[in-house]
Image (cartoon, rainbow, N blue to C red; front, side, top):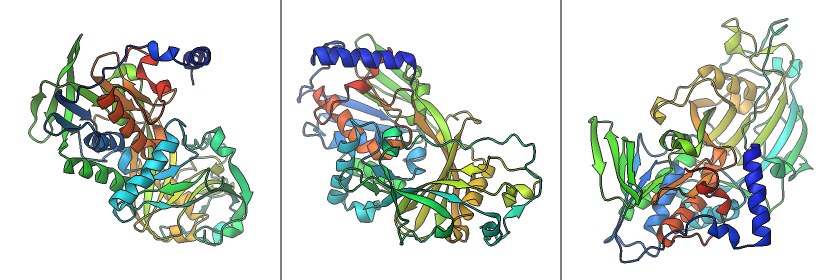
Length: 463
């Protein structure tokens, strides 16, 4: 977090402590909607935030389809970006806290109401972290998923400038403090117990529970349920311009990527930008950026656990796919893959983020570096024979929407223009809360389910 953000946060906290109501008057009061007035709402982005916003707007008590129109514009397809390529982890130890408990509860309520266990795989999962040491003797006995033996090339890594593994921002300090020493669960039988040096369980039931959804099925289900209530979902519709005046938003223009025609939606009252990492391209002052992360998906049915790892590899180990190319190992000896057993017979694993490829114009243009995925597969094969032998369904990449200081949710300085973006790797977890709170903002002029004033976009810049 930058010094400027820290100073503003401390100043606001001090002001709130002295005068609890004072921070409410820093920004203009949002208008309370007249239930009889017409609203023409455009949501930009069909990821988890846009889809849940559409869902909760269409189910808000004030929503009247005779008076209120909701259109969702998505440049590719629903859940084409990170929302369809995430792990789907839900956790009470996630962040930021103003969103987490509300969203965790809403996940359970949505699953109960719409058959989420069957429709999008909602379930509880075990969660823990382990340290492991892979010896040369052990490695020689393990076949790689490609059916080639793990390669040992004497001196292959000598003098190499290897990089350290960069972790995704999944666990903050508060979450890591909840880890407690434990024994390796017996049913966590898809990792080699012999190489595990220590195992820590994440927290305790009731305070730090962990659950899961299949992110693609959850996001597409939210969009489909919104469509059932009358939301007009237009895919391959890329927003090109938001037209506004000093009094507020007026219209939007978008490109139909199938016909190359530009269309205009007029008489717009509200535009909600939920474009994930592309939010920064549409609203540069939001400072939301994209961070690329690679992942792989196995075709395997294993016990339901999410595990964070820290694995020490033999000094002379080189992944087989690099040996055949005459390459050295990319990373130093310690690697930290994250692995999530997923519903519907899948296992998801993600690697480190990288900044080598800039954010493309649309999600269907994201490039995948297969070598990054092959490294991930090779490392996991050293401690999971079951996954080493499993079929790989997908090698993929996506861009996480990140912003220094956390997500922005709320009104901008332009009347009727809203933003909800910057959720990093907790978008699936915090999607329902964000959607519900955005619906309250737009329909009620204020939030009632949680105090998210610290995420007000107007606190940080003239977004």
